[in-house]
Image 1 (cartoon, rainbow, N blue to C red):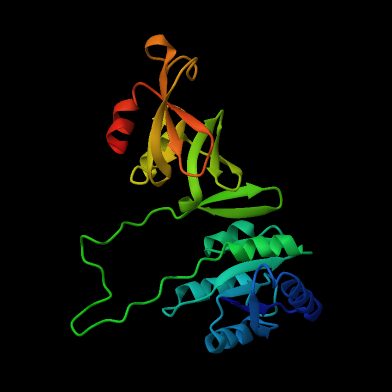
Image 2 (cartoon, helix red, strand yellow; image 1 turned 120 degrees about the vertical axis):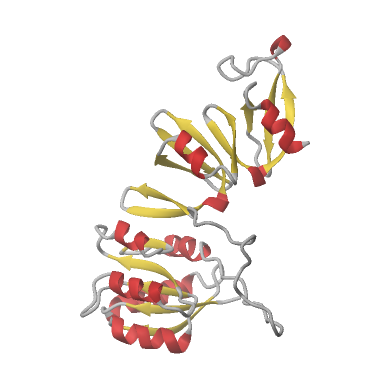
Length: 266
């Protein structure tokens, strides 16, 4: 499926460069440019008509800024495109993610970086066709309280949003917490205790320094030898480890947490 893209940038050369880059990565990220605009007002009209999946948006434009445009789109009742900011200024990264930007790229953009941003897009599920008397409103039992959907990760000149669903486990490293996904690792400044409380529905503590996504656990296994800092050793030096789906690394399970994990995989 081709991603439908709309480009909003007040500089024509920037729009041409983006068009060229999108052509260069079309084989790995099929895409179709459905419209362009050089200001926010034109972009709003073009987006309403073309209904793109993703808006490639500059921050500084005449009249309404890209940040203001994104905020206005976020308040709209109709489905709106995901937004990737592409700008020469790094000072607005946090503002961009307050309006739920998919990514924030600095000019000049590399083709590989643009492709990586586009691959982060996940389409919304299709709206079901309702029968007479049915409603789109969830029942009280089905409603889910507001919860964090992403981790905000700062890396040099950019801020990334890492979906919680992509995180396999979190590990405390001094004053930082490392997020481990199938693709790579990320560092955030956070408390593992506060994250455990916040993410209790989807993550479980396996050790004093590690939380694991419940959906990533596919089993446990006994290991022999020195456990983790001595805390995990049982008789004869044996201890248990958690097996994660599609990951070779094993995480030790502390004696205190073993009953919880045992009940989870039973």
